[in-house]
View 1 (cartoon, rainbow, N blue to C red):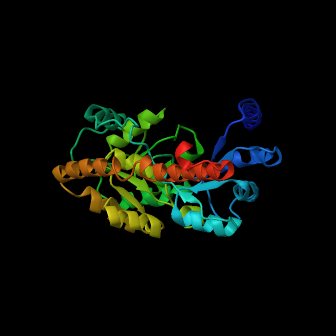
View 2: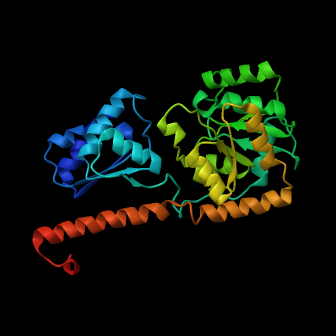
Length: 332
């Protein structure tokens, strides 16, 4: 029903406003805007997907996305390799533009709140200890986030390393799976389930952790060539990352020195990568948090890639209008 309301809402707005441009965000919307192809819509259409997962991952969305992308005036992807595969797979006339999934520079990000950190530790029966290392997962226990391998990595880590999951309410399937893994390996007391009810609260949680996890399986183009929104969220909160040793992610880690990489299927490698981040002295860790925040507020903000892309699109529109109207560009 929510999809139906979305569809009729878009139809109503388009027919009423007659916009010059429509910006469609996300593969989930593609099935509900296909009617535009038959509606003689005169404006420009921008299709921006952050969810391209590759051939035969989801046939329904793939068909809808392919049809819509081929008729859009511009297509935007969030990762250059995804964009290349998308252009080849869908037979696009030109390469999609690329805008990394990222927070804009003006987005409010909280500083490190030691009282909030202590509240989280107390919820798990832990006391404040400078040796403790909180590992943010940015979500629930999930197979497609290699959560089992992460929990199993705790076997090879000192007891001060604690994994923090969110979105794992008591009785949920993800919570039950996690607790089974914990019991199987005797890791009681090494995992915290923390409820972050909103986005601001999630960023608060990240800000008091010591590193962030970005592990993905090698089961599709979308996972292999990731551009996760969690990346800039972690960096803006000062967290170094542990991520899969896939080319795109590994290049970012090496180029900007933002963390460590590991084979996501090998819990011992994951543990070793975590220790390389967590075993540094607190003074050095604090300095690194500040450096990562500064990097995230400059190189990794949304505007770095989005402004040139949208300026390019605007320039193309102005050039087209000048061609059709025989007016000089300076008057448009």
